[in-house]
Length: 163
Image (cartoon, rainbow, N blue to C red; front, side, top):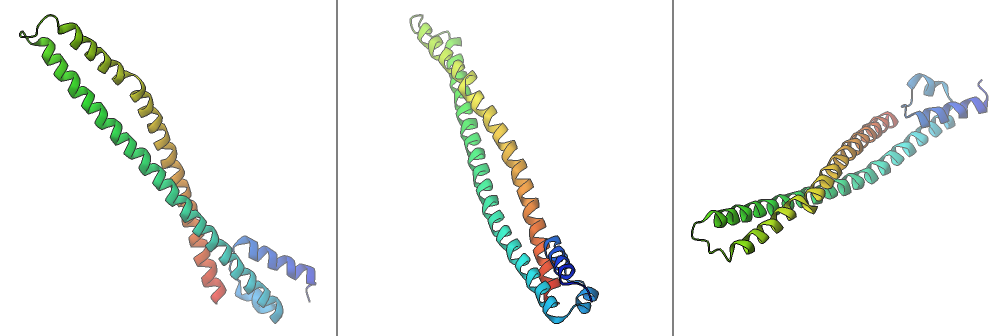
């Protein structure tokens, strides 16, 4: 007969490795040890289910963060389109032969302000948002893979423990 320490060591290895309960090994063990193996497998399933629930919440938060970044990018794109439209209108006014000479400096000043706005902080923010979007996308992909692996492992263990 195997020593108690060897049996408990085997139980711990089975429980922590994520392996199911091998039928030959379980059949070789006395009833109390089999029950311990089954209980450890069930506990591991419970832990994996808790991990998947936590992971699901993490994925939802990352998805919401990614959505906010994408929404801000759309807002910046709309503001950029508006500035380009303003710039086109100002260029059209400046090209007009009917433009009084005293208003030309005012329109040119407004045009310069629009150009500076376009090249300044908006582009920096867009660059920052693109970087953040890439980070969130990568992190979301990784966390989704982790979630899927844990869920599959929990399902495999649950079916093994049920046998």
